[in-house]
Image (cartoon, rainbow, N blue to C red; front, side, top):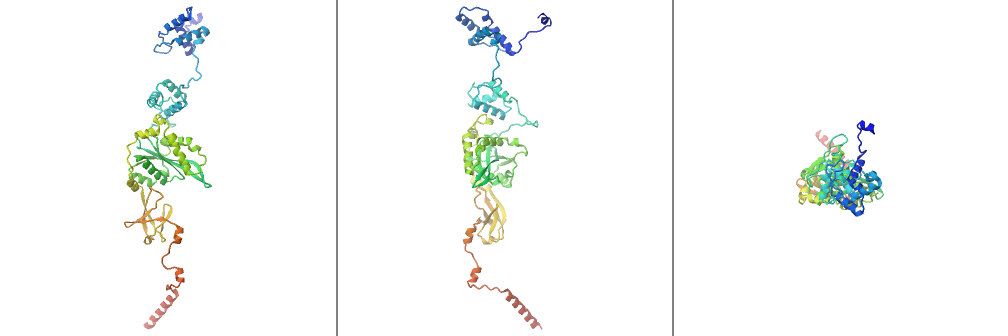
Length: 457
């Protein structure tokens, strides 16, 4: 001991826990040096001590301790010594308490969506929105939760070191995302049929304005879904945000959007993060609906399941990117006033024209289908064909010299029963004389030529 003193050694607590234990022993020190004759006398001394302020190790402000805390420290020290007042390490150290599983999932999802937002702002926003009761969760608890899951960073960086800034449209219907998802193959009438799910999402609210199950991903399906979305919401988007697939880069879609004054934006190729909102929805849809369909038996069955998932879960559930609010809530409160879609303008914008040659039998090819016209004088002519995409099942028409002529799909069975015009082999067999004698014509020509030669001689 003398050697240690001479060398200037300093005796200090071995860790923070022992420092706290020594502090607690000092607080109750005056109680330990007295011999109390009754429990009432001890209680009076503890009550007087609880009115005094003490500064814990590492703290910058003093505080008071309750009578129950001081009494507990007193008896523990009397029984176990310094070990009795040494704080024990919690079994859940590093884990946030006071949170339900639903609250934990919501808070973690919000931090992942808003990595640069402070824990204090997240907690205050959820309290103001009523998602978490005021003072139900402490800020320190929330910060421990984020540390536990490695989400205590100010910002997340991509693998290549670039900072990816979060962006969002400032109002509803300013920007719609459109995309297609491949679902499990269907089994219809003994045949395997592909499943394609088309959807349109509002950027500001993450609300799905339209969704449909089909068997392909052609441009015509995208246009039909866009029309359905505009009719159901009563609004048109200011711009569409699409990927670079063939479904979204055709001339028909570009022409229709230009006529409707809808901007057309395409994501940067080979950058899936740029389509993060749509990809996040597809993941949610797969986990909650598509992955549990098995082998669907019809498009109707798939469509019913999709609509039920949106109505009962996705649209009404708290969304992390919306600070715990639901897509339906945000879309309904932030949308613009309803302006009915002008059907006349819509029809004009979605009317396409093309040039086709009418065959001799009155038929022509339009969109991979064979149509026919009963207007005989158009046979062999190159004509302008018009078609509206508002209803892909409607028949096209021919525009020629200011007139519009009906065009219908070829019906071979009906054509077999149609009355034929003009002479036929059967009519000739019934005795109708149609003069036609090639050999006789040659004889007449030969005889006439020789007669003319005789006259000349």
